[in-house]
View 1 (cartoon, rainbow, N blue to C red):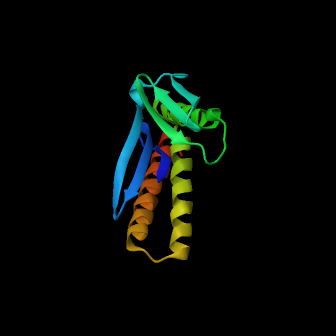
View 2: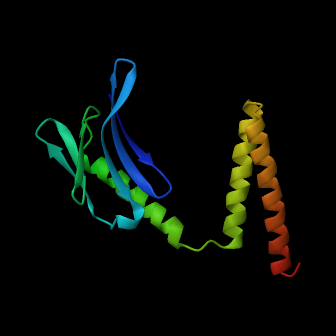
Length: 145
């Protein structure tokens, strides 16, 4: 049995999978799309079956509580993720913030390349370097340098 929280670009999904022989079967899922979510609209309550029931609007899923955490732990994680996603979408990024993000990506990919020789990572590194060079040139022109 696998129960997990998944953060995607535009939604958070709670998934319950179980293995039946060599197959994996989806036993349940709860999707919380960012465009339908409002702060405080997710609920997590203890279930009589020693689990935690997560609800959003009329949809729900029950997870086991093997970790022994309070229901608020999962609910707070969902709310934090969704709040961060909404902030990322609505907050305009300055050129400096964009450059910082590109530099962080460059560092991440460089470290990946140090540990493995993967062609896709090299391609991503080249793309990031080119994008960083273009962005720095644009920023220099915008600042009058």
